[in-house]
Amino acid sequence: MELFDTHAHLDSDDFADTLGDVLVRAREAGVRTILSLGTTLASSLANVRLAELHDGVYAAVGLHPNYCAQAAASDWDAIVALYDHPRVVAVGETGLDRYWDFVAFDVQQDYFDRHLRLAQARDLPIAIHMRDCESDVVSMLRDAVRRGPLRGILHSFAASEATALECLDMGLHISFAGMVTYKKSDELRRIAALVPVDRILVETDSPYLSPHPFRGQKPNEPARVVHTAQCVADARGISLETFARQTTENARYLLFKTR
Image 1 (tube, rainbow, N blue to C red):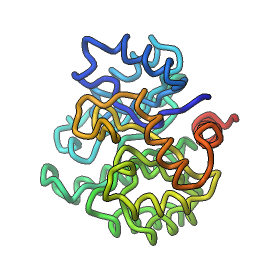
Image 2: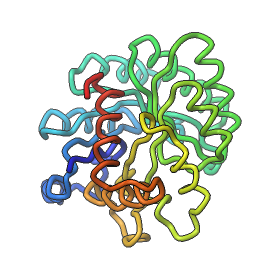
Image 3: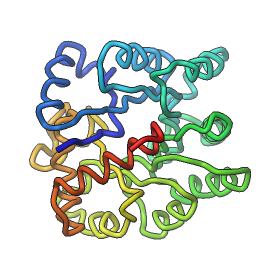
Image 4: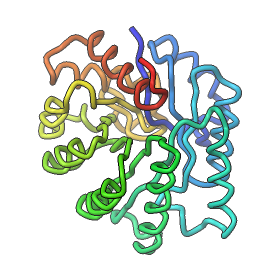
């Protein structure tokens, strides 16, 4: 069985002294490939370095909506330059966030639009953060797809069925993290069961969002994606092995254009 963790933050300080062991446990659990995402310029550079050092690790680079106000004027150009690196396969993490009040919303929108346009210009998938702002994200995605095709992932999905369906119509993939395993997440599991077989992905968002039975335990790590995959497989009425194969194929096609 092979799994693909489509969203992790391996550069986190939580893994500073344990990353080697974390990657060994991931491989033992069947996690052969991990996409590790940047949130700042420094984080993006760190993830590129990790992707250079570790087989099966690839990087996405970008400025997270909760950190983009901290970016220096030159950071965006430095981020753009990283997309020429062969281990950088996606744009992000980017998006919008109304839960935290760290960054003025117009600044978040400006950077999200930059990432969207860059993803389209480079034909790269984009990893989208969306917290307490479904309508805002969907509105900007509508504008983007009017310009042309857009490939990407609604990461750690926890929004409505209507948002899921509209974003699927736009051609996006939907990824589920540990929240789908929680006892009260019946509606999220119902939505996970509705996502077309070729558009569904799984992730950990390590070091955050540990799935059941590790809920509340930090750090989460890529090996635990198997618990999320098992939960969604059960919701869809298929075996873990079948679901693992499907989601891995989906991730490989989206990120590498191979199966």
